[in-house]
Amino acid sequence: MPNDLKHLDALENADQLRPWLQRALQGHEPLALLTPDEPPYFALLRGRGQLKKATREDLDTACGQLVDSFVQTGHGEPEYVDSLLHLASGLKLDSVVIPLQRFARRFADFPQLPADSKRAVLSTLIKLHARLDVQFWKDLYHRHRDELAGSVYSGLFACDPNEALLFLPNIPDVQPMADALSLQLQRYTERLPPEERGAVVRKVQAALPKCSAALKLAIGEWFEEVGISATPVSQTQRQTKAQNAVRLYSSLMKQINPQLQASCSRLAEAP
Amino acid sequence: MSCYSDILATLNASCRACVDGHFSAAIADPKWAQIIDNIKQETALPTADFKSLFERFAEEIGNDKAPMEAWKHACWQHQRRGATMPASQRPKRLGRALPVDSYAALLVSASQGIEAEESTAATLAAELATTEGRLIPRRLQRLCRAAKVGGQLIWATFHETAAATALDPFSPLPQTFSDITDGLGLGHFRESPVPLVLLTYEADAEGAAPALHRPTVADAADGSYYRPHTDPSHAYGYTLPLSNQQSKKPEIVHESIPGSGLVFPFKVVYPTDSQVAP
Image 1 (cartoon, rainbow over the protein chains, first blue to last red):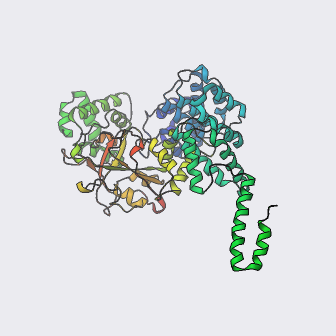
Image 2 (cartoon, helix red, strand yellow; image 1 turned 45 degrees about the horizontal axis):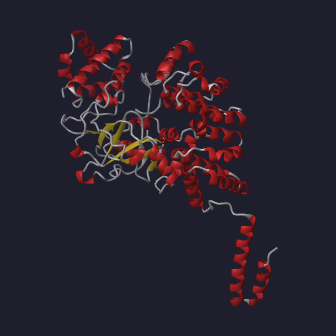
Image 3 (cartoon, each protein chain N blue to C red; image 1 turned 120 degrees about the vertical axis):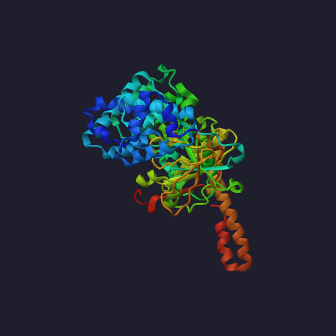
């Protein structure tokens, strides 16, 4: 079958494989795609397992070399760069982390680099668990503002979710970004132990008044779906609500069972 | 529209020898043999495009490409060239099946940088799966509408009955992985079984009303499950079901469009009942 990857086993080394890989990632080589519009990296990741061990290593090396070439010039169509970097993260190529990290610090030197390619670089760093500190992401935000705000939020989240929650008011008024963020944050929160969930929700509630309309809408919908108030409920408010409930119960009990009502009345007294 | 032999006669001698030589030789690979058979049966590709397709194929062969590779390269330059579907026959709703992971990747592209170590695509794929068949969160609906429903070449089906073209394109099919892949002739998904999301979308949504083309061998490229429809004047093509359990379904191709016309909820089917390729 000419469009599987086995023909790569006949190549002798990564230098021979690299030009083919570059053309494949540009969509210029036949690959076993599941749909004609599937990005090439899906087929490469699916087909890698059928290759000989040496060829798999050459594929990894060639991918790393193409990333090195990209970070030196910043050249490449966004679709190619996206596929190349998805392949690198899919192959778990830790060797690309340092070059990509250095490249990200020099984004300003590449004014022609499309925003999509910058985001693809940062996304790869996150997926490869690059050890980047909060300051790296904050510096990026100061230099690129809204263009990279979604990536900066994601990077901060990987470092420290609390920092990401503080960053929420900087998320621009872009609805798809806000919607994806809200879905991601909800999933994250739901996986936390119950005692930690409340703390995250309260931080989001505290940030919400300063957030964009898009984020207010998206977070508001999440809260509405699960029955959380969009505004934080203070300790005093929670006590008052509980006391009111007990008072109401107490007055009902007075009608039904006066003996029980006495203990209810004691409960309703303020601590 | 012209058939294979008519086009062949219009090629110059060297090009004709190249094309005829490759397409008349005994072929061991059954997929390539099927593609060649499809080329010979094609009725929907305009004459000029068909001729240009063969010329490009000969050029690629001259560049030392293997025949199937040369064919696929040539096809890329000649896609969405089948006749445009007339407005009178245009369906109101279209449907396509694609891997959940591919669709999640499209959603991530629309999110402009929201990424997680565990992969936002995986999260969104899980979200699609858990909301499958139910009313999905408005946030996810908006994200789906902002994202594209596919790349440069999208194959789609629709409900053929004129009075029913606003109906769910998948409704004539029992909605299991086996039946969907069977009815739509998606044999390649039987070879690499993955969960599929069934997207349904309005064909004339604002900002997303693509020209609908009758599919041709160039659109199918190296896909061997395509079958040319015999009637050259028909407005669209038909699938070849993988078994005789399903009837053929109509199909068209179109360019990439945003999902502004998506209809919710959508269905996800799993290859739990997957079969080996027929």
